[in-house]
Length: 438
Image (cartoon, rainbow, N blue to C red; front, side):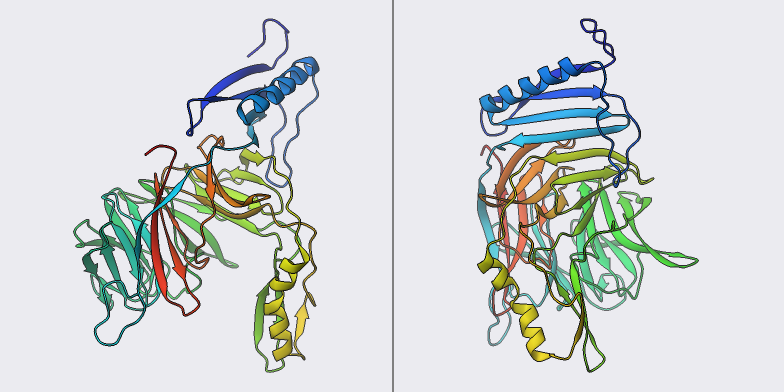
């Protein structure tokens, strides 16, 4: 809308946003400007217009707000793309452990919380902990008092049976279970009963950190899948709701950039893949409304893409880079050096990792069941989870919790569940609650 005082075709508004840690408010300066269309790999920039004075005034106001409240959020609309820039310190939320389940193997009859191989965890709408044990082909349900409520499933191909328990998620009160070897998604009722099944690609294997459900709402869950095409197959995300499959979107393609892994041809004819320590990666996660959140982890800049691949929102964070210390780099090279010592004649591409000056700004990217964006960030104060609302406004943070990178954490409204694994391979499941007020 036009500003009647300046005659410009831009508008500015200062919004008051409540923090979740105190009664203070933060202010966000919103600049609405018109520009060209933008895509993820070619973001639009602000056009210079006749409102330079207004822009400078707003920037000055934003600086003052940051000094007063510790956090400033600036929103710019450039054509169809909304840019949300967050600067300053986010409210720190406490993380309070409330449950641990998991025990070491024992002689005789195994205990209820002795797991074989946990692939997925989650909290039901009723608040119970569900643990998918791939090795034992069953789901165990625990109350928050630690007591076993029930067991669901056994090995097999019939109703109520599983062959590969990859992932758990809820649509309403129905539990979805991704079983890739059976080529289906099981539907389980709150009492553990078999309700039916949905289709999933069969004969596919891979890490449960990738082949899984991606919940983004209480009734909106995306499943990793494959779609046959004339030239092969393409990776897709399939959206599931309470009534079944609702939509399908193509996964984002990795942009050109330096490699994040080393491929080594061994003298015995085998191939070994090794991660390059601290190398930037391309991460993506489905988002509410048939969108995908993507990030190149070298930069704290998350782009939200439409189902057509156009950028609709960019969420940025002003953050100081974190230098990579020589001792950290030396420790990170142990796996590569061990492989080289075992296979001195292996041919690797690239030949060896190159040390970066700084660590990647982002370590992980997730979205919780409320549709909020979670970014695991590398900061000068240590690794932190930073949480943004659906508009891209930073609302809170909490220290990063140690967890198995193989099993994705469950992120709920005010609780998280994640898996820990010790040096002996014993897995434990932790449940904790977070938030500003209890």
